[in-house]
Length: 259
Image (cartoon, rainbow, N blue to C red; front, side, top):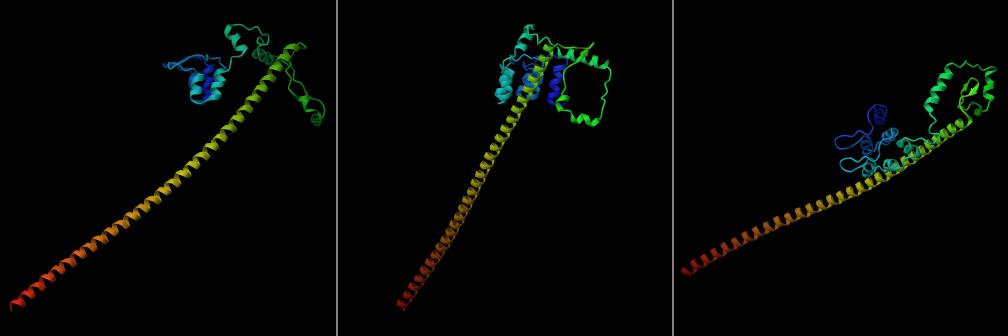
C-alpha cells in the first residue's frame, strides 16, 4: 500500500491517531518529517492534535519546517476552522454543521431503492437536442410526493458543495504552480551542477597540462644534468691524460740530459 493508503488505514481504524512512540512521535510527526503531503492531509481528516511535542521539543509543523517542507508546515500551522474548534469544545451552534451528509445519502439510497423506474418516451435523437444544463445533476429526492429537503437545506448543501469544489480547484492550481516551481528550481540546480562540473573539468585539464609541463621540464633538467656529468668525466679524463703526457715528457728529458 502507498503512504496515503497507510494514513487512511490509521485514520479509519480503531487506532488512536494521536498515539506516540518511545520518543513522543505521532504518525503526524513522521509524515511531516518525511514530507508526505498526501499522508498529512489524510491524517488531518481525523482531527489529530497538532500541538503534541516529541522528546526533542518538536511539533509536526516544526519537524516539517526543519526539513524544508514549508508547504506542510504552513498547512499544519494554519488556524483550525470554526467547525474544528466547536467540535473540540463539543458544541455545534451552526445549523449547517448539524446537517449530516452521511444520513442524507443513506436516506436517498433507501428512497431510490423503492422508487419506481422511469422510462424516457420519444425519439432517442430528441435527447441530443436538449441543452446540456437539463442533464445537470440536482440534489433532490421525493418523499411521498414532496422534497426530502427544504429549500434552505438544499441551498446550504449546494453552497457547501460549491465551496468544496472551489477549494479543490484552488488547491489543485496551487499544487500545479508548486510543481512548476519545483521543476524550474530543479532545472536551475541542474544547470548550476553542470556549470560546476564543466569548471571542475576545465580545472582538471589545466592541472593535467601543468603536470605535463612540469614533467617535461624535469626530464629536460635530468638530461642537462646527465650531459654535464658526461662533460665533467670527459674533462677529468683529458686532464689525467695530459698529466701522464707531461710526466712522460719529463722522464724523456731527464734521460737525455743524463746521456
